[in-house]
Length: 286
Image 1 (cartoon, one colour):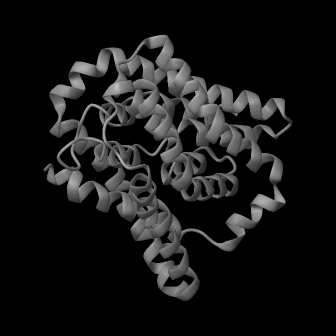
Image 2 (cartoon, rainbow, N blue to C red):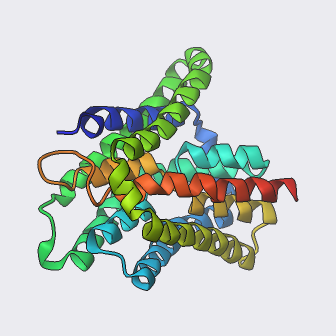
């Protein structure tokens, strides 16, 4: 059993989500009622538009079954704290970004198993791996909703402790996030290198398509430019660490890097080299 996927990766994902919970307040969820248009458009883009575009790109590029499932897992994952960082650096709507990230990180307990169930039966057919949809939902809960709830509870019960702890946990979470992606790539370099040429272009197309679509749809339905850009970031940024963790449990013999994990591992490289510079360049030119 790969110790990275069996121990370090789950721990990293839990710490990342716990850090996200430490930064939340009831006001972050109250904005759903106060700003229903922006929130609903963000939800439609994340939960419906993103998986549909991912499916279309899989069809266009003709990826193998395992790669296709890996891409759909990636599309089912929320942005995580990274989208909040980008929004803050770009000086766009941080409050909306936090609300969307928190909500999708909680609801992915339902959306990830649903999309995964569709993907494995659609692309694997008779070769569908033996997996338990209920166990997948429990895994998603343990990786996302539970640590977020614990962080939110700690902030409510001990605000002074949280105020001192949150900045440190946030930095640790970011180091772990990028460390997870780097660790997955370096420890499986040959597999990643063999898939980079074909899969890298597909992931680049996915990032560009969902980001542009998120902005265009939001602006077309009368959100402000700042809200639309924030929604575009939330739609175009996926939690690669969570996707790695979910993909890892699909393999046989326990959690390990497998064919389903390759898209999540490559995603971090493609995103850092393309989407992040593009978003920051747009923010400078506003």
